Length: 253
Image 1 (cartoon, rainbow, N blue to C red):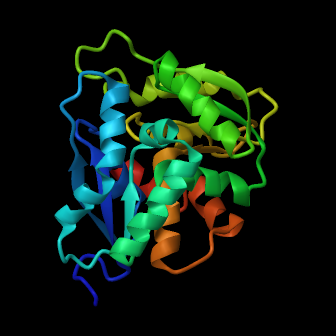
Image 2 (cartoon, rainbow, N blue to C red):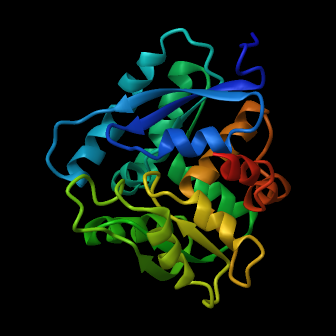
């Protein structure tokens, strides 16, 4: 079935309730013919970590909001939930959801893992918008996938009255990214789906530092690969890392 605005495929996106970055960034990242519908992950808990636990537990129920929409692949734009769930539980949940829905399901964290795998990257640097507890959980998660976290540059905004991650600007994220330019790394990951990352990544294309990716960029790449029924590859990832298509859309936004 072909949709008017999504002839290449429709992505069902799960987004944390107050995240103000996912929709704008993905509308820039999607190539022609791909569109998404969005469902909000909700929780009434008072702390970020507690809300993330709720989000993960409610992935299946939240996907039901898509009803009979012709979703080609579902995606969870929430890396923190993966850190707290851990590698084994995340893998099991993905398999359960795919068996129940009949379509592919990819998390932002696993999309990053896939990107680093096709790059054969082992030694990574992180640009983090997280408080200390989530930083620790994040490092543990990446290590569980056989990665060495060699450097962390923090952009956490403890002073925000709105949200310490979603209130961050791209310029702050970019300043944190620059701290890793001269590190000996195989790749740099800008963490979180709520921290604006596209402008900082665009500004580093061709720089002397390691290749830079973000959770949103990797999730978009991985979702399109799934729509196209392709095995994730370095060749296709490189087109995303080099800004093919999306940098032009970013400049026009």
